[in-house]
Length: 348
Length: 269
Image (cartoon, rainbow over all chains, first blue to last red; front, side):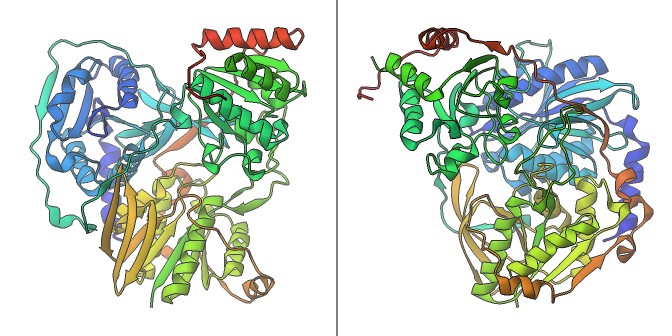
């Protein structure tokens, strides 16, 4: 590697952080149908940051027939939209998107660039951070501007050590300051700025740069419509349910209440539920309105996955179970009896 | 001959984790260090590719000197060679610094066909390295693979990408990111353990790379951790009292407040 060139590139960045301005949000289009909810939520927070900086909030859109999405984006507080529209942008493509967005960064020099933490958002952000030789903080819990470590630096809070600690991370000397944000972290706010500026950038890409060849027409693969992380009501079970027969009642309750079943590691090891229903580390994180935990003791590996649920009800025999510490409502009692009674109510 | 490299990381084991009640931090003492669970699927893929197509497989890690034990484990699983990149100056490297060191490593190795990574580490969970290394080495990254074959210098596979299922071909070298549960990582045999201690581990440090001072991990990583705080969960912790009927009644009320109602499923449950 040519360290010399790399060094020059960084020194240039280091000395010129003041040349970078404005807050950008990669406004991802989901399944070429709609603006990704997470992107709209990020726009809400980014509006606050841009106001404090006295700079502009700019949405970046790459899509097929991108014009159709602009009205919705304009309703969410942006000052400017920079967009590209082309057939090749129908789906995220690692080479095309990275090259095109990198060109935009080089041209317009944003100070802050935020991405939804999605399959495409994470990939694109990581690639761009490398190209810009800048830092990327993934899955921030909160963002704030502070003068504590430098003029108006962005501080990103990131869960560390398995979610038990929040690490506050800055990116002092390189730009843009980049972060990814998971769904449900921020609130979207509807507001319209006057005279939203719209810039269309012409699509130009040399396809010979693409090394991956697609051999036959791809088939559409629909992801399961209801997954744990976007379920509003989740019913969880742990070892305390004692048997598969009892655990199966969770699925019955879920059917009757339009809920989604998940659980800890133990039910998987016991053969009570499939692997993909695991909640916590190495499983899914919840963003539900309500989480009902039956017979779960509350190991930290599970707890880190449920903390974003708005309300948590825990049912456990052991009054000292760790799960009660993170629960809004604590029911000390036999999880199996209570599950059976609830089920009887809904069965009628 | 296929040259396969598997990137691994040593992480604290997630089993029996305990929290220091006073400081609220993870108790690190006595915690066992293991190979990052996601990386085991990468090792298994590397070993099975070698069995099918022949070649040589090397495990690489960057970390403190004790990460040598993770490499011994890889050797015991059947890996041919291993490389430990370790230096005080690389401590606290963020993902960009790590990527740059790995880039330097592979530029020095020159001859590589397939580099395999897991999806993410269980301790920092950024998942950035596969993408950044793909940029750094300018080789394609293939994720979410189902079936694959290698013919001469061409790698063909079925993969999921976005919401498409694709049949693709790409020229080596490539990076592969293996998803969780893609395969069944093999167990270590006794003869494997014996062999592991007969094999050498290669060490690289700061000087190996002849890299400029600025690559010092702690001071030159673009991101800095400025503070850590314990997460304080603000929850009501309201205890629901009464006999079982009263408890169930209260639960139903809370569920109703959250808009949960009985739905007609048309079947008897």
